[in-house]
Length: 400
Ligand SMILES: Cc1cc2nc3c(=O)[nH]c(=O)nc-3n(C[C@H](O)[C@H](O)[C@H](O)COP(=O)(O)O)c2cc1C
Image 1: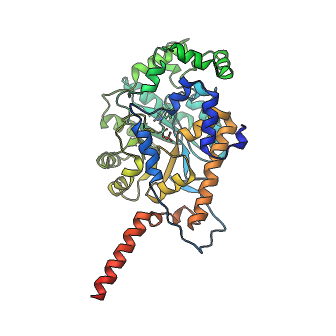
Image 2: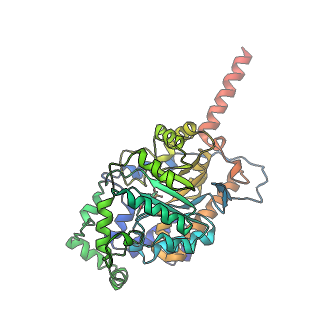
Image 3: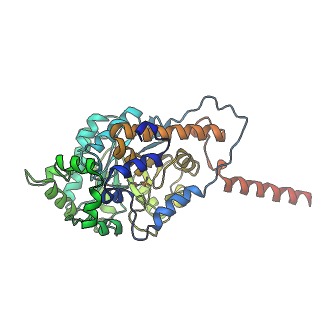
């Protein structure tokens, strides 16, 4: 099956799965423990219902979206996914290039294989960067400085990894540090010879591009990965560390992973510009609610002026439209675009982006919205039902 023949994100996922050994695909796809969170995320979207309006002229539809004072071509960007270069060489560069070409933001992972400097060269106006807290605070502050120097346009600090999570698929497959591949895992990998040959021809585990310079000169990718693993996660991070980043970074700053309204209030109270409401794609705490379920509470907590982004479970344009109706300003896609990068490099990411754009456009036409300003809770079944009940109650009262 060629990339061009993919008609939805699930097709790209199947192609990525076929290409990768199970040990690698499981790293992308897996959740934690019983993987309840993966179902929570998917079901939250599946349980929402949009109620269309008709006889509205939607012949000219528009999906441009504003965030942080900048207009992008679509209301979604690419979420940070670490080690993408292990799934396909230079995957982060393809993600950056595709984001640049489509004029959507690319939030590069703090555990990316490419460096932020390389990403910023390819996507000078679309490059965001994600930071993980480090035990030695000088690393995180140096990363902020580098982001300023190379022209990153917005920064996100991930708050939802205070400790490593319990990814049982990885443990079962031996995808741990140091790598402990089991015999069945090795035999299964032999069924994907093209990927295996490429991987070893490129020297095995790729370098963590943003951490290379913090290791002693000439360190191998494995040694750099060890340094990273010693520095992150850092369970001792507090709001004061976020404050230090706020003070060091003059541009737009987001916190990624906020799920509690009180945390949302604290963060915005200290001058954070945007919150990424996210459960990390169900890869941290299995019992978390879906970001969609907490989004309205968080919107009420921070008011209309704080930028709210949402990720986790987005696979369709309709998911993006639904999140905007519920109060998000912008959406990020993790696996959806990563499947594209893995399955087909630059063409694969472009395909994932264009599938989502086409689906958004169709849904706007189907529900009677000419642009994103027209979206809101009035398209959601729960709101329509509540409004009708209110009217009916009012009508009965006036009849009495
Ligand atoms: C393979 C993979 C690696 C990830 N690495 C990071 C990371 O380095 N930093 C981070 O903040 N989030 C990371 N995430 C979480 C994503 O940024 C995002 O929150 C999540 O993928 C959204 O869910 P979705 O995949 O269902 O779209 C990763 C997710 C995946 C699937």
